[in-house]
Image 1: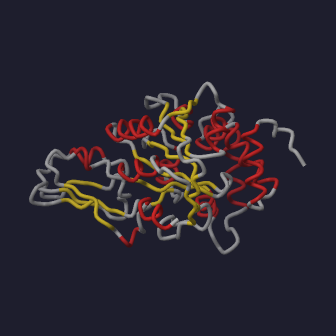
Image 2 (image 1 turned 180 degrees about the vertical axis):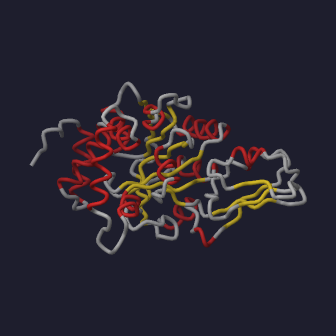
Image 3 (image 1 turned 45 degrees about the vertical axis):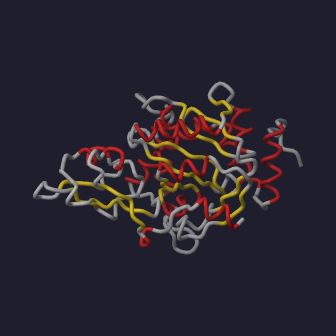
Length: 307
């Protein structure tokens, strides 16, 4: 059965892939709505749409009615399983955007610590689009620039270009890397995003600021929808001059000056291993080190060798 919204070739390609995965009609509609009206979807989710004051009490009531999901998971955890991001240091984000061949891998939970939406499937990975960030666009005084969300692979790139021609454009990998580097200089975090309605897989790299990003706000408020990069920041006490630049830059509030104010202290439970702090340290006193207790990195080089 052809659905009434399936006239565009990119939408038909998405629906075909969704049917191939056995997605229900509701799940297919969810994916279509998410891409077709992403700005409305995100604004509502962030509570920054004009109708949000009326919808928020309804959402809270539904949350109370559905406190637990099958398997005993909280509603917040079940939501995060279906829609989440993984922090990426700059070099990992650059490698993900410059993959030069198709990849198909189901990532283990030690890499993507969620039960759903864990596939890294790149069809035509050279197909990249930049989209005006829906989170920034919904904010009253957004961070600039807006054009920082990178959509990767098909059928997602074509759908974004078809449905948001005024807010997106196709770009080459070199420009995508330049966007990542510029956002890194601004102190923003690279996240690889996965969503169940996006065929259960990776579809975008978002460059997130703590003031506008809906996912970072949700994470601060107890919805665990962001996963660690698999690294943690480690300061070199001898090199550190306690200038505080990294403390001010950390988007997760994981760094603080020690009581003696002679070095930096890291709260490993808050540190997401994003690497924003590293470029702020003029003394090169910070490093990212593996943190197995926080999971494993998304190692694109290894995946290229094994798929």
